[in-house]
Amino acid sequence: MANSAQTSRDVELVARLQAAGYRLTPQRLALVHLLSRDDSHPSADQIFARLRAEYPTVSLATVYNTLDMLVELGEALTLDLSEGCTRYDVRRPGAHPHVICRVCGRVADLDLDGLERFVEAARTSTAFGDLQPRIHFDGVCPTCASGSSRKPEG
Image (cartoon, rainbow, N blue to C red; front, top):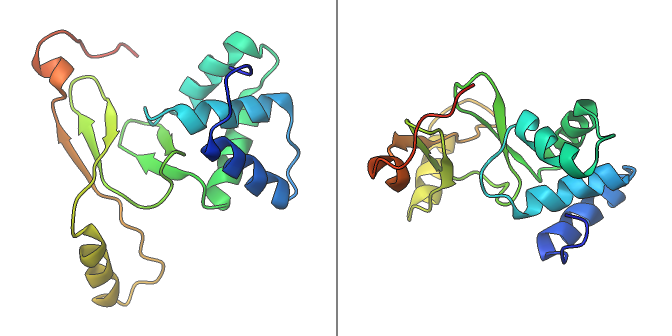
């Protein structure tokens, strides 16, 4: 993980954390590096398990604290998909829809033309403040539709 080349998203996230005055420990940098490349929308537990392989001293608290920092800075989007855990999208932190496989739980980003107009119309037609869109569709991913996957245990 640590030897892979940095991406522009890595650089952006590190700069935001530094500007906000957060310490950049090796574990925190590894977490940022992992998330800047991960489009699976992982949970904190999944992130923790992946980091432990290379950083056995990383704590679950470090993972949660760093994720909270990224959310607070507007650099991570939280996804509550009624799974009993929160998933995180750091690669695309702005509001956008997702598609979720009902069989295996895979989450993917979805690009829809006209969504911005729909969101703006929702914001202007209500007295609610700080309206944040949370749009997702469920279906069956191509892997599960072909029968080559099964629901993960857990």
